[in-house]
Length: 104
Image (cartoon, rainbow, N blue to C red):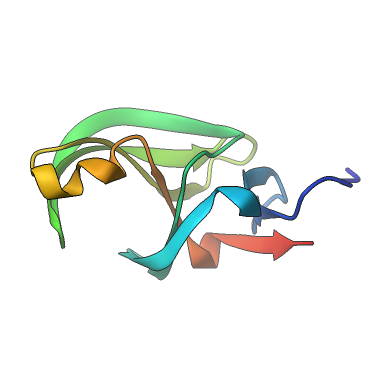
C-alpha cells in the first residue's frame, strides 16, 4: 500500500497505519515493552473490554488496543481517570514504541 499523506506510525508486524505524527502528544510513557507514546487519535485498531488498572500515575479504567489487521497488542486507551490531575489522559491512546515504526 502506497501512502503519500502526512508522516505516520505503522504496526511493526503488518505495516497497518496506526497514528499520524500530527497526533503525537508525548514520548514520555512506559508500557510493558518499555517506551511508549501518547496519541490524540489512533486508527485501524480494535479495543478490548475496559477494565480498571493501577498504573504508575494512578488508577484508571483502560481498554487494551490491538491492530485491526494482525491482532498485535499495541498498548491501551485511557477510558477514565479516577484522579482529577490525570483527566487530560481520558480518550488518549498509548502505543508501545517497539510495536510500531515511523514512516515519512
